[in-house]
Length: 492
Image (cartoon, rainbow, N blue to C red; front, top):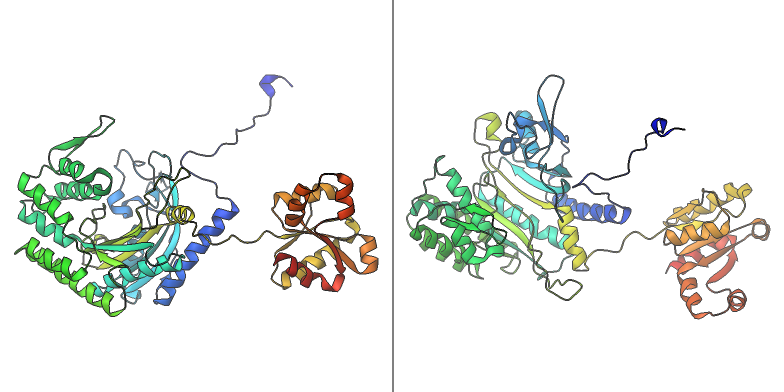
């Protein structure tokens, strides 16, 4: 065949920013999501699944530019010339769902959901274009009691994921407090001041990474980083910068003392005082239900970078001593968070619809748990039943069914190859036990079990092949009707 007529073979390649997930990762994700779902179920929340695609204009904050529909989101034009976008998060689809079904829903509407979300952004280490989020939200509840419940949910999910108290903390703040500080600093709580306020929020959100000096530069004229890139600042005056930095350090280990400090800081600001009252209510509920200062604290450095939060905000942070392979400390930081967002549903209905929620990134949380060695053991590999004699396939599947009935994972080798190749397959599956049965064993009503783990250890200590054959390590022949008990004994 000439080069010109050679059949086209596409190159097997994975798109940048997307990942393949093997069995172990998928099982770990499922366990973590199931743990969170169990918490949400116990609190009376209900599951919801929304479509992966939404109309682009329903994504609100992430609405593509008319001339650049793929900025930030993956978008395509439908046959009716409407723009569709892969969902950027799970919150905007929830807002659309509630608005569309508003009259039929009991309110507050309490839902949870997990699923992939998509960001059309430059991928990098640990930064994917597709990742899984897990959310819980309460839509239609205006008071701080709903926020307190979300904060408690976050703490309970940490426990359900396998973390011990002291390995995590939930840190809480209130956007209204910062609004009060900014009002006193000359930044108006109006649409005109929205961009400046968002710059302040993003500057504070970088406090743990840039430190006070870096944040001070971003609150003022701006900052040039090590690469030479320049970030324009919020243009606050000296008084405003000092007020904001003072606010970020107003926290105390005791929630009550933090509230007292904040009441003085916000002064006569009506919005700021309102934020203090909300934190006071949240504190009373947390205290009554046993969530002490070590599990949930008030931290004024927590602001959450997104602009749509309107009240209490919080983050779940890991505190465990985590180190890399060279023994250097690794800071994981926030692995989830949430807060009150009262304006998202109102975009669709033109009326105030209060809402509050909690969200965590599944992959980021799993990565942190893995570094802490806190992941549960994976599902055990299956027992592999070798097809020693193809005429006995019915008997092999009968053996597998008996093991499965006893709760033991089992598979019959259905590929091609002799017993040696089948044993290599069992090794690659990391199987502990291989089951052998030929005509002789069938006639004697017996089966042979090989403990591959024990055999591999014994093989390291045996020097000669003759010794190996004579010792026949980690192998036993048992009566056919004793199969299940013998396998259970080997596995234990």
